[in-house]
Structures are given as C-alpha cells and as structure tokens.
Image (cartoon, rainbow, N blue to C red; front, side, top):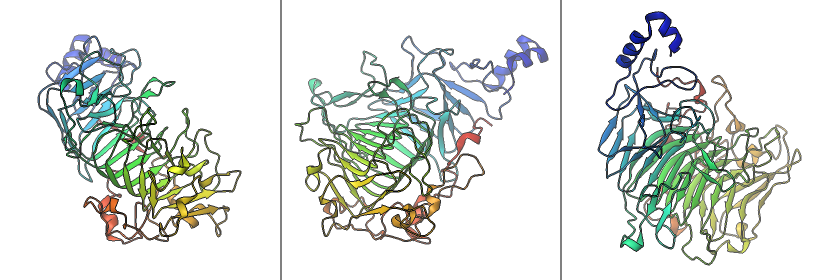
Length: 503
C-alpha cells in the first residue's frame, strides 16, 4: 500500500482519490484512511472492500440479505458487522477477511467483529489448499473481535435466552442466543447456523472488561445447533479463548487451538456437543495477562444446584501445556490441562494431556469423578523437573482398573529417561514453537502409539470414529486415520505473521 502523501505528490489530490476509487469499489462501502495514514487498497493486488464502513450510532452494520464474499477481493471488518434477518453470508474458498482494530481513530471504536445472529447463517467453506481466513488488519494478538455465531439450540439458562459475552448490550434483540421462553419460543437442538470448514481465525479476541471477563474469543458459539457443520478450524494467537461454547449441541472435528492467551477449549451454560480430533498448544513464554489459563475449561451455571450440566464429550485430543522438554521458563498464569468446575459434566476419552504446572486434570469438586465427570483411555503426564511440581490429577478414581487411564511423571530433561515426550509417547517435535517462517513446525505424530478405548456408551452414538486405535490427535506414521487432518496443507499456518492477505 502506498502512502497518501506520496500519491498526492505523484498525481495531485483529486487524481489520487479518483484512482483510489477505481481500485476499491463497492456500493455503500467506502474505503478510508487507516490510522497510519495509508489508504486501504492502494498498491494491493486485490481490491479492498470495507464491510461496515458506515455504522450506526451503536457501531453496528448489517448484512440483512444473502451475500457472497469472493476470493478476488480483500475484505475489512469495521466495527460490529451483523448478519441478520435470516440472511446467509457465503464466503468462498480462499477469501480473506481482516478485522480492524478498535484504535479510537477510525469510527466506530468497536473492534471489527463478525456476528451471525439467530436465524441467520454463515457458509464459510474453504479447502485444504485454499482456506477461508479471518485475520487482523494488524497482525497483533487481540487485534480484532473474532467470529460470533448465535443459534437457537438448548442451554441451561433459566429463561432460555442469554446475552453473548464480549458485546455491549445493544438494547434490542441482537446479540442473544437460545430461546426466549417468555415469548413462547422453544429450543431447536438441530438448529443450523451454516458451515465453517477449512477456516483459520487469527489474532482475534477483544476485551470490553477484563475484570468481569467480558471478552470476545476467536470463535464464539452461543446455542449453536447440531445442524451446523464445524470441521477443520484453526484459532491462533488470540487474546482470549480460542473456542468457547455457550450452550448448544454443535458437533465438531479437527480443531486446532494454537498459542492463544486464555483457555483453548471453553464450554459453558449447558453445552452438550461432541468433538473428535483436537490439538491444543500453549507456548512457554507467551505474554499471558489473565489467570488462570487452561487447556480445557468447563463451566456449568452460576446456580450450583442446577442439574442441567454442561456435558461436552471429547475424544482424541492432544493437549500440550507450556512446560516443554527443556524445562523453559513459563508465564506465571498458566494453570491446568483440563479444569472442570461445578455443574459441569465434561467427558474426555482417548486423549493425551501433558505439561501444565498445576494439574493435568483438575475437578473443582473432586468427588464428582465417575458420577458427573468421566475419563477413559486418557494419558496425563506431569513434570517434576526444573522446579515444576505439577500433579497429574486431584481425584483418586482416575486410575480405577478398567478405565485404561494413566498418570505418569516426567522427572528428566535428559535425552533418555522419564521425559515429557518419552512418557507421553509423543515426539520431542510436538513442542516445536514457531516464532518465524523458518522455524520447524510441530509434529504430533507419536513415536509410540498408545491404545484407544471406545467401550463407553457415550462414544457409540454414530458420531465418533471408533475405528481409530490410538489416543491423542494422531496415530503413528502411516496410520490412515491421520489423513483426515490434511495437516500439511495450507489450511494450517503456525506462523501467519508473514502473510500479506491483500496481495
């Protein structure tokens, strides 16, 4: 992009502006100068269209009829862009959408955020080699608001209707999830909010109030139903949670959460979906400003007497904590691999959780294990070297015979010994942290495959692929089940900072 002053010296102000509008054009969507004094779109290979260039007094703009975004154009999200009125937003493979920061210079102050309201749909369908990418106009952690999808599936709120976190209450019907019982509405667990497939979400997560935790995430899902398709989604470098589920029944496969600054998988308000194949990675030295930060966090309801528990079911996850095989220093706010609070019934199967400084599995009420919380075929590896004193779990029933769970201690950083990678079966390369385009990427294919256990009735519903014979996200090299990830394709990017999406 060329500087506005350079253009003026080149052709004169009037010619520069007319040339600019020839490059960037879309009805009712006006390009404008950004905070650095650059005109968006000038010098870029693609035309740039600003979504939400003329927001209302509350910082909202609306897509109220069907619309398609195409890969030959670069899109900027300015403020809160809401898909409403039953409209479908279609985003073609290879399309790039960049969220604008709430820098206080470009009105409105609201960070660029895409909000799909109840009854509307998003169909963002990429391919392994041509993903749909949501990123920040500025590639900084928390540079924009993220993607929020709201539906009509069930939750455990008393009145059935919740205000999604991270957005100011607009005083209208916007920003709500679930069903309003007072208006005669009812839940629809098969609700369809569209499709997210081969999608990356980068540098998202914005805070309205860090004290109260009112923040947007990379991908926020409020009462999204199981008619929605969600697979091959990567959320990275976010300032809050990677994935957060507020109620809902949506199922998912092949999710990656990489180097986010809060929990990677957070379930709340009665979420009851199923997810298979996931990766969660925390980097040792990332600047973590909130506490505590976990791999999984599962919450129920503020009413501890509630029996309508959050009850997500997860299988085949590899959860890498911040403690690495070298014993590197870590940020002080890291906590637990999987934290399960009251009124929460999270179930974990066939997974590996390793390298967190407090617990690998922690229950707010330890006696809940085996009744409302369950784990089977799970490996926990806790470090006891380099000053770390992490424990495996704070419940006694985890290693009950027949559950095929194991708690192992890593006491050594030596090449041979009880190391994190040796005990977990993973390669040391699973801890590769990418800080430049030339760094080696992580490799989650294990050196030693640990067996699976799909005997639980929770896994026989037809959703889970019970033929896989490994725990964790990947089997050994050559295992045909690994092909479902398409992990080496360009839909996965461990270091997106080098990308120039508008060229």
